[in-house]
Length: 265
Image 1 (cartoon, rainbow, N blue to C red):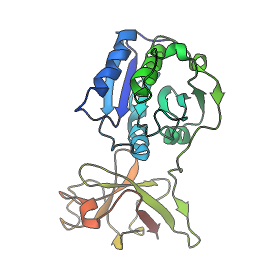
Image 2 (image 1 turned 90 degrees about the vertical axis):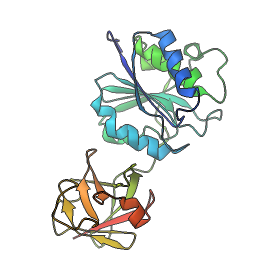
Image 3 (image 1 turned 45 degrees about the horizontal axis):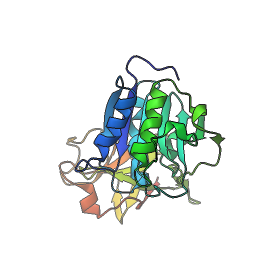
Image 4 (image 1 turned 60 degrees about the vertical axis):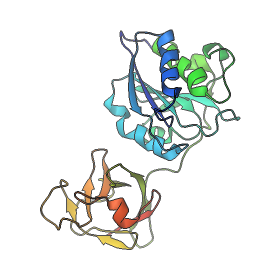
């Protein structure tokens, strides 16, 4: 990759901000390439929650310029035999553990390549077995930003770890079985339904946690329904969300990520 004047590197982790972890990762990157532009996506992924990290990365990576390098570290297997990888997908690069964190990116992009990180000369000396974010992934990302090609970090692999696909399943009765894939800080329950699968129509009925939702809204403060009524709305990430205006749909439904959502006509 030919680096630009100010290459962009994003960071997504479950490190939180109370400790030194994020600062250490940034320090390593800036030591190797002081010209990079570092952008925090989030460091509040629930601890060791790979699916949540994969979803958050999916929702925003295309908002960044071409050739952006995304470092994602949600890594419960750090120090084990799990591999480190760099992924070239679409016009972006992804660096992190081979644990499914980049699955949704690979599902979306029409072409991608995955390379195992085996060339230790790109790592920090004597990497800590508990902090690959600092000692492996940060220096690899910085090397990418200076023009190192993904092929130079190690061999191409085709058996990368994948999470279950996001696509809902078609049942024998014609209904679609989806699931809640994320609950945001407002209590909106984000499902894995997209517009291509669920038409925005009054005929569609959603069933979740024994509650039936028939109403679709175009915006949260739409006055078409009762204030405390559950409704469906197309969210900014392109997925169907279950919401309440001014309240938490998740609390009302007592919903958790992974709960099934059935769409039928």
